[in-house]
Structure formats: structure tokens, C-alpha cells
Length: 423
Image (cartoon, rainbow, N blue to C red; front, side, top):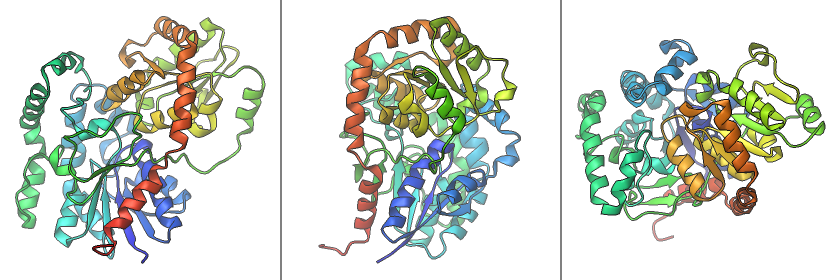
């Protein structure tokens, strides 16, 4: 029987595209998916033919996007700003919009940051499925993640899982006050006290938790939440469209190095594009810069280097000689699917951990974003391009990834939620 399913998500395009991929698969099977997220993403959702519901906060309440990005990525307090000022401060608005969007739905699907989703599921006694997009979200002490600035902690791994469990407990105590508005609101709604942290245990549904990333990045771990099913990436990159300028550039010479910073880190690029252009010129390589801003805002570029405000990654990554990117999980998924060697410049949040995992599977080198200069880009790219093993491994894993189908797996699991007992 067809179901109406609300998928809630917050974040950048990398946090929206996977849910569009799920929605399209749900739609293909006769269900009615609805995506609830920032109003900013209405055009990309509706252009995919998916019903949209705006869920506050609207980013307009925080000022321009570059200011928000600076606060998120430009300081070690970025996670605190995100939780306290964006999500907890506006939790009641988010809850009200989610509650309205959940009218007459049969299932609610949540993202790790849609804290209002669990509240609505409990209030309405709705079946609830949680999702994670990257291994870091699962917070395994058996396979500990690399937190931004947390490289020194990696040495604790030789002492077993106990030090990491202690570290996680310490983090929970440190961030407990960030979540106080949520616990107060639960009390106001007459809901029982939540056991644990909303950002740790509280984000996971006891019914089903979908890991929407490839097994290439992590094997299932014994301390993952109960009822976690690894499905693979949910890849979507917008409707296909021809770009005459891109095609002409690609046809005019050898495959370029493609430089990209996703849809969020691109807002704090600073001198990155200048360093990228200088590095490509020094290497004698053609390059494409995906800048997130009109190319007219850049200084003049050397011959053989072209800037585009936006291109679908699936359109350009497979035609690159190498890909330089920030390792947002959506960008990394597209880079792995393209089968090209990667130089990763992680900025914040899950990106250092994603970068480490890509490096561990043999497809990438890593240069932290804060260390990027033209000289260092030249050295890292020269090393990457001079080692055929990276390119060979990238091609090999692209074949493996092509055999995965994250949306199909995820929707199979979602449909099992509604299957008759004993089926």
C-alpha cells in the first residue's frame, strides 16, 4: 500500500541530495515523499519533482550566508554555534513546522540535526526512521572517528575502546548545556525525559537507523546503534543539462584538475582559488574551479584555467585528471563514483574523518584546508599524479561503488517497516 513519508533534513546540498535520491526511489515505487528542510532548498527539491515543506529556521534570520559560514567553519566553536544558535534557539519553530508537515503522513525520516523530528514522532506515535550520512555520525569507539583537531587522540586507539568511551562521555558532559532547550521543551510537551544526549544516543531510532554511506568507508561496527542497516550513498546531483562552455573547454585540451569546495565551505574560500590557479599553472595543467560565485568576481585567470559558479559534480568529476575537494560526504561520494584520484582539503565537521577514510582506501592524499598554499598544492598534486596506484585504485573502487544502490536498499528497509508481522 502506498504511503506518505516525510523526510526531514537540515544542512547544505550534501545534506539534501541524499534525501532527494531516497524520495525519487520512494516515488518510483508509488509512495508520496515529502522533503522538509530549509526554505533555501525549495528550488532544488521541487525541480526534482518532489513535494516540499519549509521547516524553520530560515537562514535569513542569521544574516548573509557568508557570515553564517564564517561562524560555522572559521572557529573551533563552530559546532557550538550550529547547535545552540541555529537549532536549539529555533527548536520550537522547527517543531511547529515539522508537526504541520507531518499531518497525514505514515512515516517520519530524520537527519541527525532535525531534532524536532523525534519530538513529533513521539507526540503523534508515528513510526520513525533515523539516518546518518557519514561514519562519524555513528560515534564508534571500536572504530573511532577523527574529530577536527583530534589527531592526537588517535594514539589512544592502541589502548582499546575504553579511552574513547571515556572521551565520548566527557564530550557529552561538555555539550549537555547546548541541549538544555530541547530537554526543557520535552518537559513542556509532556514527553518523558530523554536518556542520553540528543547528539549521541538520542538521534537514533529504535526502529531503524539507515547508514547512507558506502561500506568502502567503514565496515559495520559492534557498537553501532541497534537496528542499523548500511545501505550505501544516496547520490543525486540535479537534473541533467548540457553546458556548451564546459564541453568546449573539455574538448580543447587534456583532462583538467577540478577544484571544488562543496556548497558550504566554498563560502569561506578566501585565497583558495588564487592558490589553486597558481598551482595548476605551475604544474602546467589545465584546471576547472567551481567557485560558488560568479567568475567575474575572480581576478583574471591563467590560460587553460576556467571558473564556473556551479556545475553538477557528476557532469565534471568523471572527466577530471584529479579532483581537489573538501570531503563533505556528498562531494566525496561523487568523487569516488567518478573513479579519479583525489587531493582532499578538509575544513571542519565530518570532513577530516571522511578525508582520512578516503586516504586509507588508497584513493587520496590529504592537505588540511588551513595549510593550503600554492606551493603545498603543487607538491601534493605532483605526488598524487605521479603515483599511478592512486588512479588505479580509484578506478577499481568506482566499479565497486557502481554496483551499490543506496536508495534501493534504504527504501527496501523502509517498506519492511510497514510489512505485516511474520511476512
